[in-house]
Image (cartoon, rainbow, N blue to C red; front, side):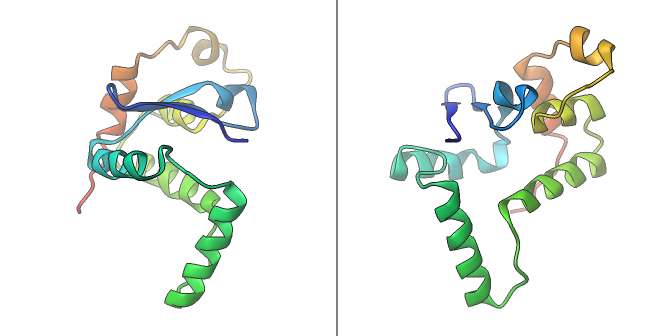
Length: 130
């Protein structure tokens, strides 16, 4: 189960799955989607009020209905990573927000402490046109 803690006062989520690096990461929520997250929380009481398998199934179904190429939720991670590169988000902070391990990079893994505001400053570099 992908359990996440959402703090709507400070606009971040904490959690993740799979790896030790990803399980407790803190990720700010970009200002451009805060209204969407707020509406989802109001409607469903959760960021994703369904199982990941149900989400995947609905995503596949919608892709077919719209006649667009099939995508997976994991594709969103590729998009996020590419946007971070495009808009100059620091490589270390991109890894932190994605829950990637620093491996042998002791400097970042052990000494690279970043606050929520540090991460938010990096995330807000991504320009969103709605």
